[in-house]
Image 1 (cartoon, rainbow, N blue to C red):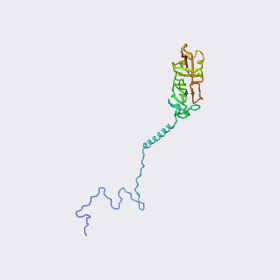
Image 2: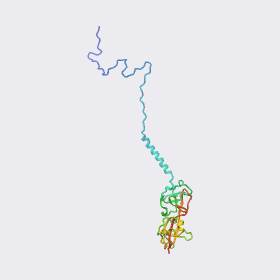
Image 3: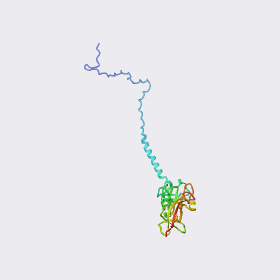
Amino acid sequence: MSQPQSPYGPNQQPAPQSQYGQAPYGQQQPGMSTPTPGAPMQQPQQPTRQKRRIPTIVIAVPLIIIIGVIIGVTSLNRPTPATKAATGECIQEPEGKKSSEVHVTDCDADDAAYKVTAAAGADCTTVAGTTTVYEDLCLIGVNEDPSISLAGVQEGDCLHINESTREATAQDCTTGSREVLKVLTDVKDSEMETWPDACYNAGVDDDAYDYWYVWNFDFYSSSTEPNLGSLTGDDTNDIVFCLGTEQP
């Protein structure tokens, strides 16, 4: 009987075995499931594709910019209320309208009615060229002559009173004019109809005092009909000028 032959040659050594060992043919590798006979082979699970997340800040910034642009354009197209008008700007006719219906307009526009001589909050009796008051705005008509206004006339100035029209204008202290001795505001009719009157009671020199002259603004309010008497009431005068004798 012959001896079994070595599977390796005389000078060959068997290959080193893996330190983990190798399963015999026909046996399942450790860690792998054995398929059930007749069952389809399970395909390896495909990796799930994850959706890319866009950072919220990237979306929020353009959105804020768009909203800002919309607000800006809307604000530019929104008319400015007349009550917010600045000195030198013009407003529409306020008569018979609510304040929300009267707006700032271009002074060359057809609907420009009044020019603002002083913004809201000023004392219109001291603002030269003012003839009209709307709410708290000091105004003059766009076609009015500023010289007809007596607002801003001070003590030491002179008025000339037209004998036929009884209208007064401010002018230089020349022949026929009267010097302003005192300027009073918010004077009731009753204070001028009795003696001593408001001028005398205000300390005007009795020897120099000769005449008084009343002047009122045209007044408009969004809640009332135009009051062409005074800012404070029908029986109250906006300005009273205590005058001296005519200049020779």
